[in-house]
Image (cartoon, rainbow, N blue to C red; front, side, top):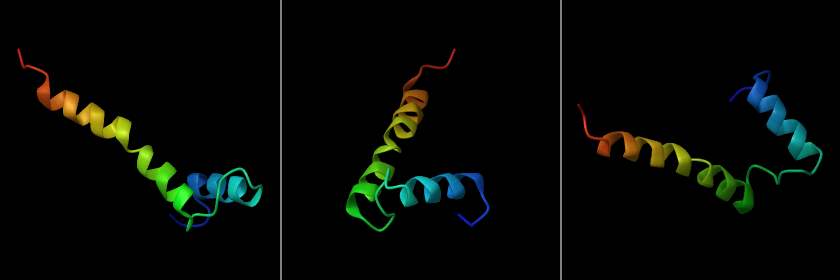
Length: 52
């Protein structure tokens, strides 16, 4: 991400406000890793869906 991108600006703002932890902290990394779970589950479901 680069400064000026919408997601970067949002994350920077909530981190500066103290809502999210710093991006080099383990709680932040855990939150970001957990956000991948729904996408992985969706991909697995797509692979196991029988084709017609």
